[in-house]
Length: 145
Image (cartoon, rainbow, N blue to C red):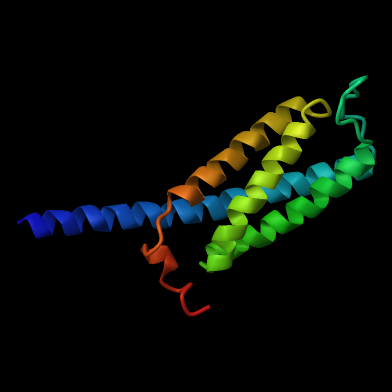
């Protein structure tokens, strides 16, 4: 009886863990697309960006645009890797989400609402990937890759 209950709990836990990795992959792709769009706006020097005088981390919008464009492309690639269930993508997912979180924090004065939303998305990705435990079904295909 105890063994059956443990198997049921373990099975549900594994399903949740695998779902979290899928969630993180989709979120990284969404964040990546949004960052690519933000990058294009910055490179085009779109007028939607605010200017903040005397900002410590001041950088022109073209520089931020290129930064977000590159980070967005990397995030999309890592998100696709998570959906393909490769181990390197889980490790890179936490790293790119952390870098994106910091980049969006530094870009807060230029586009505050969008930055805040992307910071929340990045935090959710980190949480989802950190919650997933090794040895769960999402790792099954990763061992041979």
